[in-house]
Length: 231
Length: 231
DNA sequence: CGGAGTATTGAATCCACTCAACATATGTGG
DNA sequence: CCACATATGTTGAGTGGATTCAATACTCCG
Image (cartoon, rainbow over all chains, first blue to last red):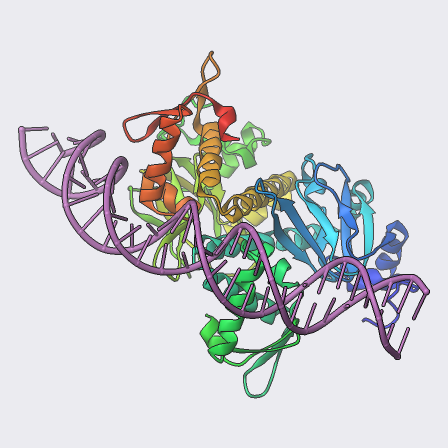
């Protein structure tokens, strides 16, 4: 699956993208001709608030964050995008400007399909539409539980929730039941994600370590000893 | 549009529902045969967390709230549903249990279509699917800006945002530029919606009144004198 | 009119924030 | 590859805004 694709020398990388996964070899080849690739460096923006790009962008490699700046001048992260995730779906459905910025938090490779090409594609393969719908519903789910967590005034709960989310998405489970993961965000990033400050994240992670719930190695690596105490 | 429908003695009420609005008279008549109606009293639940109802429910009359109970035992309101809104769309797309409760906050009339009937319908009228997609995207939009607002630590900002939302949705604009609206929620409800407490909502609304931004008449009626000061 | 539910107000407490100083990590050019 | 520069993370002290608890007032509906 992953073989020839990493740097997209080979053209079948579209196969890795969940929404195209049901297409056969020939169809994929056709999709590939529609795709435009683009690379972004860490810190570069794929989108800006108020822009009117129309099309679908798929993350092939790297990570990106969607964020807005709150009226207090702080950054609020709304989504994190990882390889296989797509963005811009809104522009396919309704006519509205982008409402947030999207920035690479590490070097990112993307594939883009224009709105027009994509719509032609859907006419021939309606089940792609189904995939998009599914993804939208999942995203609603995530946003809802995010609201639930942010709504919980207790910052501790939010930290726990975000650790669980990351463990679930990027972690590996050990035989003894512990989890290991690399945090995809800095302290500051985590803070923007859960709506608090760098310092507070730092303090809370420390308490968790002192309580024996987690062990930190370096800044990004975390071992969750007792995942139930995060729930 | 509204004429014969209110109490659904007449069967064409489906016409009022945005997602069916593109259908012609004959098609609507057919949809109507698929619909099951149900009435709920204030406080009754349309759904419970963990339930596995599959189908689409459309609010015809009244208001409902979707909420979960946070780990602190407080209620967090995720959505408000008004006439024309639908819920249960998730069950049409993926197989997952309901993740929140939905409760009538005043007497509610609903129309339901089963998942199977709805899917048959979509096969014949694919543009209904388009409507659902649009609604999903709007909902994502709303959730995102909700996160932006809840993330803003400042409770004042949240109150302002919620007043704007309600003014926009349920308010009427006067000639002098002021807005009048009936709050769809109690103080406690507003508190659960923006993640704070009854008392704080009360205090903040009072300050707004003292500052001359709003005037309250009774508990539910609010006149916004200077809408720009809420932005 | 009365009573239950809803809203307001006050006082004390506490949690997260801010500011500031210091420590560690990361990355760059000489 | 080291030295410096910049970014990122930690820790402490002090402050303030929202919460909690408790008592009182309002309002709306039967």
